[in-house]
Image (tube, rainbow, N blue to C red; front, side, top):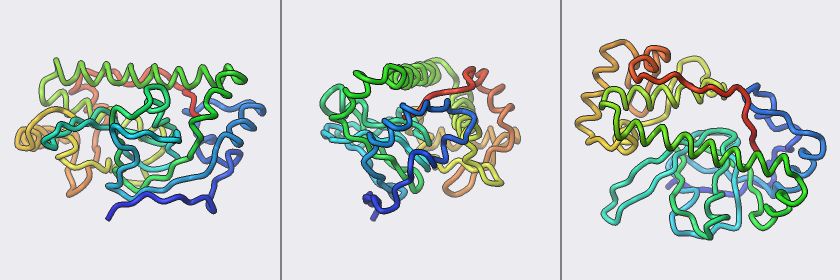
Length: 250
């Protein structure tokens, strides 16, 4: 059974955080790094398929993804779900529960995931004493809104082929910037994940993905999508990709 478990004994010092070496993230000042080191309370690991946060639950913690893939989703009473977005290293999760009092969506691990754990109650200290980090949290929230805008546009106005191409191109570009690929470029999603993201039936999704494969853009594996042509996917979606080069994280 998929589980989450604390790994305080294996805490990664913020000074040695592997994300800091990636050019996609901005560097911390000495004071910021010292604060974040004290703000962090430990680490959590989750197996693939584990639920990290549950819609309607209250959490005493915020999390930054240190490694692995996950996704945010909402469910209807009959079990149907809508995947809202995907989470990757550097993403902050649980902020909604801090502001709203309870989570309005759930978060599940797509692959084994490790997370940095922060105490929610100390978030106001960040706002009171570190304006630059407070701006970073605001930037992260605004970026999430921007991504959701693009996803909504895709579901509402792109064709099924364009939707699928956009989703895979979006995940591929994000993962490439984070250097998540080691050799072959596999995205750890199933066709059911794609269907739940795009609002399509599994049959329609399968037919659409076969069209992308026939164009030489992807190759579908049992539980993963191999990207063969990232630029071709963007062209098929009519999507220009990300504009920003450096982003913050906590």
